[in-house]
Length: 309
Image 1: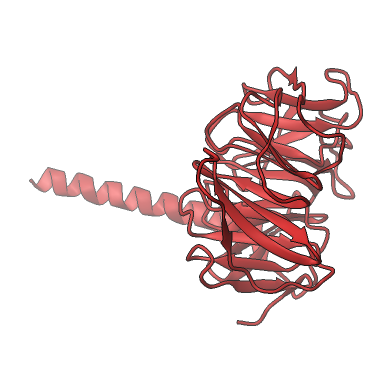
Image 2: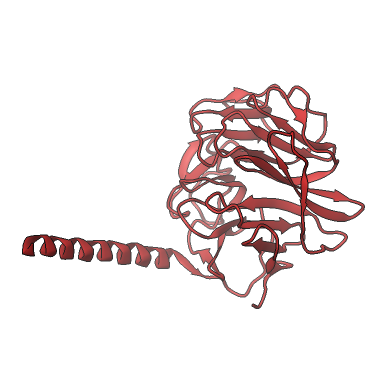
């Protein structure tokens, strides 16, 4: 019994030391966000290796966690097409000034909250403004505007975390620019594209699409396990809508605060570990969060400035 107690004591000490060490490393990498304006937001999400909301900007990643804002002190790149996953995040974009990384970044991945970036594909060749990944699946979708050494123009998908790529046929999609794209968290073949002509959904890796929404001018979307949450803009009024993926049940509007007439929702994010926690980001750099499925919203960023609680 004494031996068991001794072993437990050693184990507890070691775990405590490891925990303190990891916490110290994180503190060395993160710093409280200065009282500065956050603009040029290029994506957001809830990575599975953290409890915070990550915001990708022109100057690195900003993190909102437990009511406080933080920023990274390294790798403050211009992140584009940012996508959170269970393991961390994928992104594209351009390196920060003074970096020895090639421009553009291609497709990169981080599993340690942004401290290190792994080059996945197209390094030094492509910058993807439209990128979608499966939260729990190996699926990656990119909209490529300029041909590179491996792929041409169009929507391409990978089923093996970026090792190989295939062209989606886009049958049924109208000839109109995309406002936003999103992938299903688990189903590799399910992807949605928001356009001014509505929300289109494909369940066969982007080869065939069908109109999913009943309204036009869909500005952003988030695909969850059993539903799609998307935003619309009609008569200068923004709305947030939830609709089951099976398409058989009626859509429901989620109440949101009134937005300025010239403002638009650009990003919608749902926490996969707690779907009642959601956030949306507007063109005017406002960020709203809810912890109860929209019954109450908290504005944590207004015109890019941190709000006072």
